[in-house]
Every structure is written in C-alpha cells, then in structure tokens.
Image (cartoon, rainbow, N blue to C red; front, side):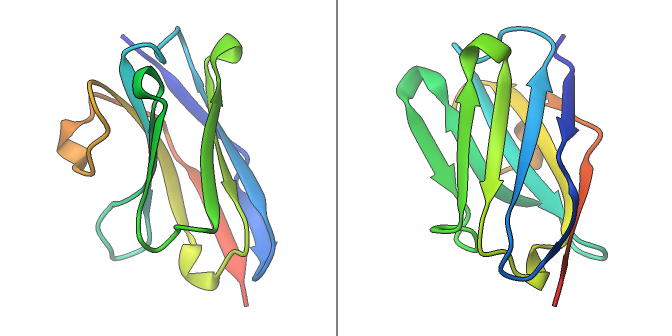
Length: 123
C-alpha cells in the first residue's frame, strides 16, 4: 500500500509560479510511475506530467509542455511539479498518482491517489 499526500497548492496570478509536492509513504521510485493529474470543474481528469525513475524518463501533457517540470527526491520519497508561466486554464484540483509500471495517461491504470490540492490562477 502506498499513501500519497499532496501540498503546495494555492492562489497565484497569471504568469506566476507554484511548486506542488507529493510525498509517498514509502519508497516507490524504483519501480513505480509517479504522475500528476488535474481536474477542473465540469471536466474529466487530465494527465499533466509523469516520471519513471527506473528509466530516467519524464512525460508531459501537451498543454503544459515547456511550462511545467516534474522531478523528484528519492531520499525524501517526494515528487514535485514546478509550474511556471501559469495560465487561468491551469486552475484545477491537482492529484498525485502512482502505479507499478510505466507512465500512462489513463486514470483507471493508477492504483494509488492523493487527496488533491487546489490550484487557482487569477487573470
């Protein structure tokens, strides 16, 4: 069992930055994909970014490429999402998720989820 706890959400102006953190209850990086999703009101949950440590690979959704960066600290069992040049359309609840295996964009493929953290970008 893996527990995930997100933090770092809040209110930011357009063009600003935020960094989200996802702390895992135990070491997951060696074999797990760690991924960020987001869900805006009235919309489906959307893939944002994922990292697979065993392959040193990162993946990004088209809407955040070049603006967001996913990274992690293996010693702290923590994954980060650095969000720069933020836009009002980035407003959503951001969720951290984990699965054993490669990064995929399908929410149903993830076994573990955090409770989510609200990010609001004002125009």
